[in-house]
Image 1 (tube, rainbow, N blue to C red):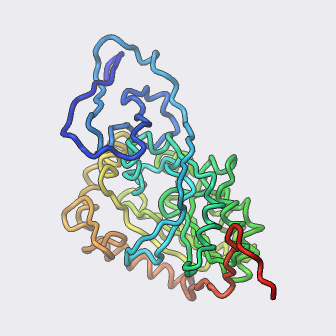
Image 2: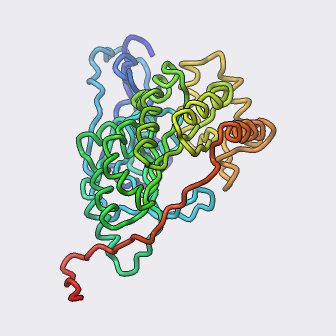
Image 3: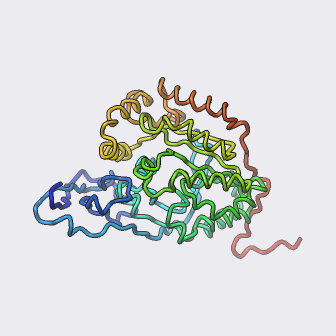
Length: 383
């Protein structure tokens, strides 16, 4: 791109109009200096759009004239908050996402393609065009009160982080935890944010009844790599601090070494596990990098911009673990990969956990304390 740029619309074959397409993507042309603190390098149109925007120099508009690049938050008027799935390799059949999009901006996030369903880009839009569900606690209580509801662990944080920065203001996650605590309902939480420590009061009470587990992802111990790859997530040291605080409060905690990216952070796996075990964390897990749909190109752009000397080597090893492809979506294989490289990572993980005493026991949450909330207008029991 030269000194000036513009975004040109190019017609593509018609595609189904995505729900939420009334929220157009930001211009492709974004001054690099104005996108500091973001993970994605670009903002290409979603795969369901009938037009694609391409940045090129037309000599008319200066980069200095481009509008400031800011995070915007809109209200998501969802009518239900519990999402169901039947995936055999995730360990849960229901989840809650208090937010759509995630300001952490992790460039490798497998949830980025979901923004295409809103008519937005999985690139910069995903980390800057956010949607909040303010009615989530009330909707959850209503769903738990339904006569046919059968309690099982609800997973939170599997798609976008419930403790991303805007949670400080909106406190949706805290409201959800208050509902779950009152109902005695089990929950599993995944996050990259030290903000989880804010809710230790609720989490510790739930832990005493075996109602909660918290997993914190530690991708790297290198602050520079973390800043580039996960620009607005908590620093590695803050995540370890959160793990220690949870463990000290009696909340079952797990360190998640994920995603493991060959030739970029895989050499840190043992160090991360050792650091977590040293502060008393009892459980650990790992996931190999996943590159579905638009994530592949976004990760490739980021790698070329930040580690061009490793680009070919990283993708060669990724394909070695995905049967020659950039991504393999098969159940079971998508999380751990296949082939010699994937096997070696798995063996390293197992050996390190055995040496450090991790995963000696796994806590299973209970539904024994579940009390169905009273539905609106329901008469109270006499006895």
